[in-house]
Image (tube, rainbow, N blue to C red; front, side, top):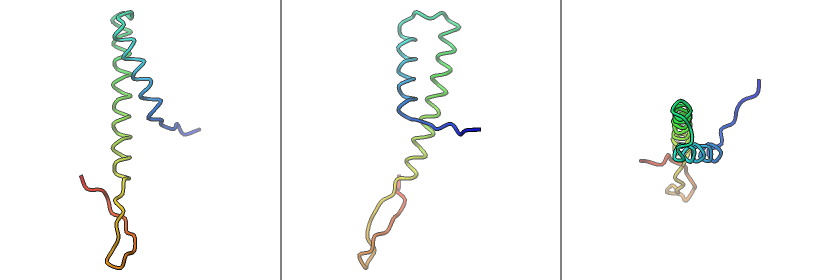
Length: 75
């Protein structure tokens, strides 16, 4: 079984497509609700992915001897 890879850019494009469809008013109520649910799911996945990326951001600095050290970026 292959692992599905997440693409933030692809997910954001899909959310934009969903938003355009919803704004067009061309879909019936049932289809609109399904699109809304899909958009909310994608939005949650994007938010989780961004939070994980944020945790990986490191602040690079130097110790007293001038050696580089990595510390977590504080909020």
